[in-house]
Figure 1: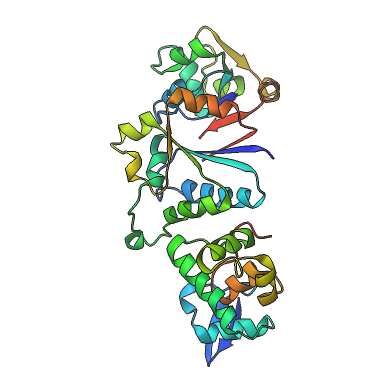
Figure 2: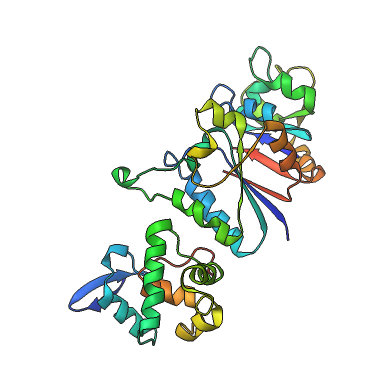
Length: 96
Length: 118
Length: 111
């Protein structure tokens, strides 16, 4: 399952829920959630990385001037990569 | 027949998510799919019984969950940690629920054909 | 905005003839809507209409036909809780027509 998160960890505890519930597949961070993939941000992301690969949407990072700050082990994807991730997984959950 | 799962994570009334979710559940039921409904995070508040919405002048949609078994929808799952963190127990809910651990819920989500998030 | 006239009162309905305000309903209104549907309300019709009103009061849902038959079978017995019987009373769709006459919204999931 592809898990998609679009809110900042400072705004909502969504990533904590994903860390608890998600059992596998992959996580894609988009929109405000991209901040979770940047250096110095406290979030449950490290816990999630133990269970599945983590991707972050490049255009959303760039728009926020954060593309130089991505933490290690997170893969930056473009819109084609986003589509590919959706196609690769049998289902998808957008954690609103 | 496909496996549909509805994931509810918002408290009722503060936003329109809970009501919209129920409407879509009812519509999906009319197409006779295999439907399960999940409540976690603040979504567990959607099932609390005894609410009276007259004072806020909004439709009380919680009782509708009690008719879902007539639509052949009777799989209501609640995540244990979300429930316990809010001081709730299965006796507080309008329908009979199945309490799952986070890991059990995650595994169940993986099995679905379609997951709709509210 | 569409309206119907009942006993000198003007009552709002939507483009399909369902009441806009549920509280506008009374038996005279029901008779008027039934007439426009080509139905003269017998005791058996009233039984279904009243059943629907109580059902809506309790659950806040207007049931589609499949659910309506099941619920009526539970309350009034299988000889009434079946689609043959209900279609005889409401030939253009029991859930749709009966809900309209009962002053309920259109059943969710009804096309």
